[in-house]
Image (cartoon, rainbow, N blue to C red; front, top):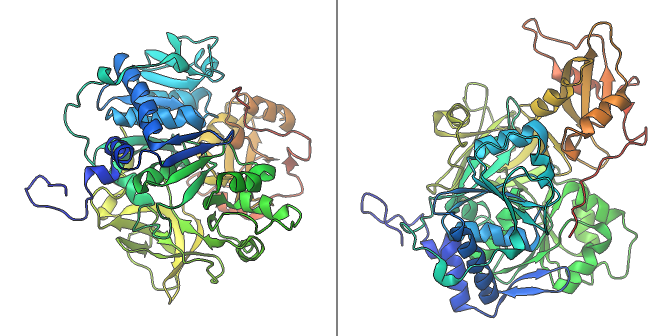
Length: 541
């Protein structure tokens, strides 16, 4: 039991060995050393004892290079073995894990480097050349994963050569507490640059803990098919460690490999973004459709195909509403029949739907969702180095999600729309502000508005409406080529519409709701129809 500063015990806060990475790794290595924690695509496995040995070696190597308790360490990896080891080794030292999206480049990369205060970056070797023309802020050194890196502007060594002895680990300055910062996770902003979400060990534990996802147990093996810089990747890695369970690591989602991998690894739980579920359902029916170990899957967002997933593959389907800053306040029962629901409020959280003045709306009316938890540190601890955004999000003692819902008489919540202008494309949250900043960098563009339009594959496609500089014309294909060089692949607009003037309010604010309502018009240029496709850059192994 933890003892709080006033000397009283707080039963809402679990002991360190139940939620802090260092103590969990030590605990399971002692209690269940031969239990498998991770299994990989090539069949390799790590038991809990092997996991601890590997983590301690990396942690000792990092400590020899100056990483100490409380330091911020940036990690620029998609996932895999090295991603898991760096995540846990950084936390084992009591340092803060700061992952970046591997698609970042240009001004967005510079922003997160500056904001992070990291002095060490662990990155895939193919990404390191992007640093050459960037402001690297406080970075003093880089470690390359995957071999020697070319073009690093900073001292660089190979991560795979990083080894240390357990005896080289320094003693902690103090115990690592559940409320200490575990990570800073960057999430897209809609009115400014991306914000770094401060997440404690207790926040990540609560996000999918036993009282939140009570139907996921220590006997489950959870599929990891999302990147480490995404809460859906690192969060599941962490909570399965907390349960003493296991994970099956699939480097990226692959429709053809999904079911064979599930069978080979005896995976029992998975997280499916809506588009992933769509891809699985589009595969031809097979006699093996129910010959597998998967017993449950989260489908986010929940679509009309959920029932088909349940019936065809014989798995229970759940859905949730969550975001990086909160901890799954809305969770469904298995196979919900209420069309479009995200579920009901779980135990341990308070949820309100309010108007623009934080006044509660009537039952059935649409309002922004506000959340708070009973447990101290059960949600984010604010935005790093951004007190204004923190105060705005946490005003009146509630966290403002920025998302609008309605609630029915039975307590089911239904997502309606985003209050601001974030765009969600294939599992990635995209800042319209950041898209617009890159678009207007094109010399012939005077102004731009970015917004989401419905995609055939669920969620959104990115659309921009632009107005040219007087006397100039804009070639959408040339603009697209320009943006591909400057933007993360998932941010590159699919649709481009050119207007003489964007519709505006009397105060000169763009009326995005009008543009969004008109969606893809007859004068809209379609990148995919023009044969230009963008994909995540493949990193060599």
